[in-house]
Each structure stands twice: as C-alpha cells, then as structure tokens.
Image 1: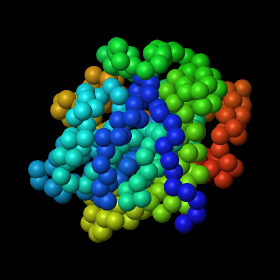
Image 2: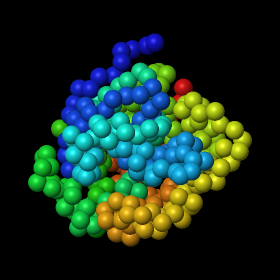
Image 3: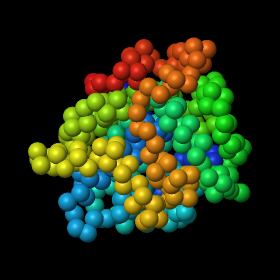
Length: 312
C-alpha cells in the first residue's frame, strides 16, 4: 500500500463543527462514514444507504436514529451522551461527517464514502441552504458555547456570498469556504489518499445521470449483496424527486429541518439540479473560481470535480 495512513493534525471548531466529538466514536468493521464538505449529496447518499440496509425492515428504524453526525456542535446530543448513543445503534451505521481528512480519524476497517460536486453547483445549493436559515437556526449556531466568531447572516445577494466563499477561509489554514469551511479543500484532503482501498469516491453528477450505476457501486463498496429487486427498490425510492416528495412527512414527524430551515424539509430539498450558477455568476465571479481551484486542487482532481466519473 502506497503512502502513510492519514492522521488528524487539525481541530475544527466553529459555529457548526466540533471535530473533537469524534473522540467518542468506537468504530465497527461494518461502519460507513459518509463525508462531504456540504451540499454535495450528503443526505442523498444517506437515503440510499438507509434504503439499502433498512428498506425491507418492519418496523423500519427512523432515519435519524441510524445515521448520526458526530461533528455537529449544535445538535442536541451532549458529548458525554454521544458515545452511548452511537453504540446503541444495533444494525449497520452510516455516519455523516463534514470534516476534511486532517480533522477526521482514519480507521482501516471502516469504509469511507467521499461524495463531491462541482464547486459552482455546490455554491448554488449552499446559498439556498444558508439563506433559508431561520432565526432559531442562527441562535443554535451562535449559542454561547460557540468557538470563534459567530456565523454572520447570509447576504441577500448570492454574488456577495460567492466572493467571500471563493477568496476567504474560515480557519487560518484555508483559502476558501467562508463563512462555513473549505469546500475545495475538503475534496483535496481525501484526493491525496485516494489509493486507500477503503476510500470510495462518488460524484453528484453521476448520481443524477446514472443513479442505478452509482447505487450498484455503493452496494459493492458497502459489501451489500444486492439483488436486481433490491436495486430496483433502492433506485425507485431514492430519486431526488421521491426524497423531496417525502419532505412534508418528515416535517410532520418532527424532523429537525423543520425548525432550522424556512419551509422546513421541503426548503432543504430544493432543486437538486446542476448548472444554475450559469444564470447567476458573471465572468468576473468565475475568474475567482479559476484562481481558487488552482491554489487547492491538482489538475486531475479539478477534472474529476468538474466532470465526474469513477476514480481509480
């Protein structure tokens, strides 16, 4: 195997994140860690795995009960309860993270699903996400225990948000991602270790254009013996339109998105499409992207982020 194993070398603590909470995690050989910067297909991937592992189970466990998010500082699970909470999950766990690899522990026995998307498409979804935060959400992010500066309100003009997002980092070692955390840097941190056999890369564009193919690859990586009937069920029940159609049901069950986002879960699952940036960003804006990506990404990683396709 080429190269050393990744090591945690940085601590991520801000209005959203607390990477130290991962110290409460005890890995299992059946675990999957779904890691993205944000707005790149995180929830979609979790829905696929939920349908894969639990879709035929009666009664079916609640989605949020089997897919914890340890690095979320603002969720109502105190650190001292986090370990027992995760340990109590009896079946397959698919665990969410938004941490770059230098802040996320590496375990050879765990499978990592790295999901990414063209940064310009990430931005449009990010703007929708951030601009829909409710007053309650902002209060959660900016609670008295927050480390560092508070999260500022989202600018009304998406181009104003873009300019900061492309040219500033929230943490000192980042060059983009403000006022959240690095997006390009997140992908770059995993790309450098793409030779590892338990790192599996998936691209949002591929999930749109070949959903069944991506589900099949995810099943193989998850060591799930998928049948043709399973594949049909999973694909049918995890299209973006199907997931969005269940948003009102999620709100009725008390999904936390109902208080975090204007319009609840229905506002969280917005468009799910690519290319909307072409109607918003100017040539001058896009030049900032060209400069930012060359600072952070290698040419082969740029090509993959912009075009998709299998890695390796």
